[in-house]
Length: 267
Length: 267
Image (cartoon, rainbow over all chains, first blue to last red; front, side):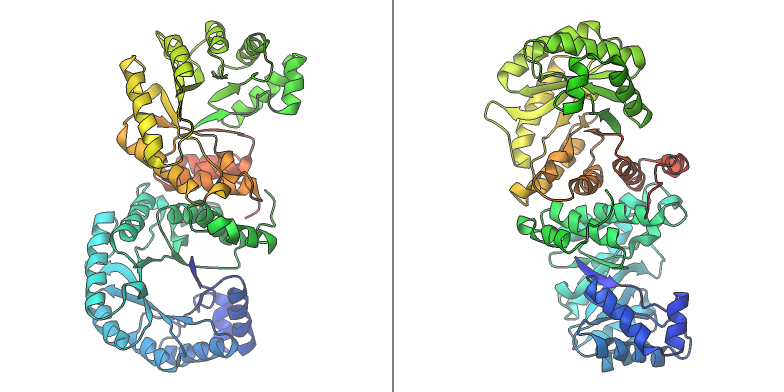
């Protein structure tokens, strides 16, 4: 599974202050820790600093890249910010995100041209956020086809169907899971991704519910996720679920994770 | 999910001694604890006592039924033992098991006649144990059809596809999961069941792997299981997975389980 480490996000109080004060050591440490715990991309988000987002975003990209070879996931709702960050990012980043909302779509698409960047494609359109598998697939289909027509490789597309809280409707988890399954089956090479913690919004014991839902999503084909790689049980769930679904020859990853202490918790 | 509590099984050293000495209090306590932790059926197995199995089995059934209203799951490879136990069991038991092995099939089928017993149907035939979804479905199809033709209600049939260790082949988990999905989709009203701990045979951290695999099996439709209901994390996984797959209106079971302390563990 491809892991995008989510911790360097200005919506988190502690990180916001560190970004504001440009505490290079802290950001470098959080990037490094996430890498060491399995992050393949380091998400960087400075979206809360209106008017100064480009400055902070570029500083974040520079700081992470001074520390690590791990690429960034450039996470901004503002295409201008993404464009500037892309100019200074070395290697191939991920971009979070494009969608079928015409404003965002038209602004992000030209930025992708000529790059090999990986792009998160949100199942969202000008008509709002879809709730059923069918409505999500309509958007995903348009997004995938138009991206491919614009020379984005299928393997660079990461579809995010968007998770809604199970507390808002008991079918919402299953609709999400069915979407993951359908995209995995219907679009060869295209990836699926999500930040799934929204599933447990409003119910108790959220971290546990998120871990269980991760195992379920992997069962349906989810192959990438935006999450906190320092959540040991979450990472253990991922390793175990991928082994059990058949993505781990001779259980080698499982046994290696065991030797490295990933399963060092009670029961 | 329907839970068959697996603890009263003579293959477990401690229980074997208690059965041999007919320690009524111990058996009653283990039955009661399993019921209190969510068992819908209490499995009783005295298969290790060759020649005396009927005596011990009948004593087990009597002891459990003196203690609880919860029905037994009469678990024996010997149709004679099942037949005798059925004569004294009050209410509607589950029987573990029939299969397509001709000897077992021909001996168990007449015992079912005229009862409303629930029957575990193992995907096993005279040709041995199947490993692929296709081979399992062939057996399941024959078993389901012939049971229904012999007046067994679909809702009384619990198909057990049999779990093979993931360490024996990385496709084996997925073949099992695909079988659960196919039976759930193709045979309305028919249940699926398993004792899934075999999946982790030969790999470390078995209990954890079993819990993750349970979430995955529920994602594919598994609605019954033979397990240790005292395994708190396993039961918590079941409650969470059933909520997340949409089988828990308004998350009521989840919230109730939380209030009752089922989620009282770290993280």
